Length: 367
Image (cartoon, rainbow, N blue to C red; front, side, top):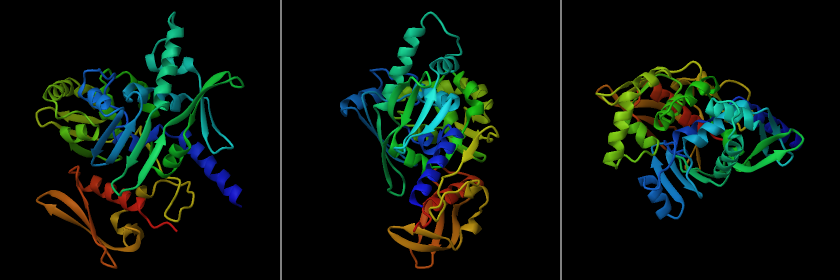
């Protein structure tokens, strides 16, 4: 029976990967810097080198520590998106690992929009080097509840003679993370996204993709979430000028940007899909739509959650407001272990409700 369950779990993570581009968390925390290439003189690069190849960033989504020989950029995210989208096979291994088999030709053609050129050998070397840079990065992510996840995205890059193609092997601990996370599928938008010149614009678009419903965010809120060096006046000035020039680009992805208010308005995107965690509150595998697609706050009342190593029952949920702004959700429990979920991003009621449900579902009691 134990082996049967293990195979079922493995099958489902393969299916989840085939249907996804990335986990939402990967795009909401700054694992991938919002730049095309890190200049050695940049604030980020200098701090990374000074700290011995370690970068630590804290945002409202949690804390992330990145260790490696090189920081990852939007180029690395682009290539991973291409591999996830155009992998010819997604194969489970007896070790519990998962392998993505891909054609270098197809990945490079999708990434560069060019056919095979006289510089093909250099291009393939470049692709392999970028994948190795991803492999060499270690990530430690601590969420807002204090849960810690330590993993590499990729454990191996190999050539498989049987398939006459290259492959990447996803790290075991990353797979566990992938299983439990809400993931996202924006493969339909990838070709258009790869044509965006500004790496910062790409990072912002990906970040907005992770929001299922209409929402609005201040420019500074988004930049902080992406790990942008907002303390650098020069960088911020260049950023604001770039944003002003990218209004039309944003609109093509369902994002309106008002330069004078420095405010984003996300209209949602029907081409972006969401794939649930593989586990429900009873820690059993599920195949259905995300719970958030079926629930409102009223449906959460009476549910059992895990809070500070205790099991508690949700009694009521109410909003604390200041004028039209929702400041926090106040969660009352039957044994008076009450707590607040702050509306740090100043979301509207509909989008904040989604965030509250996502948070509470993530701490449903598991036996």
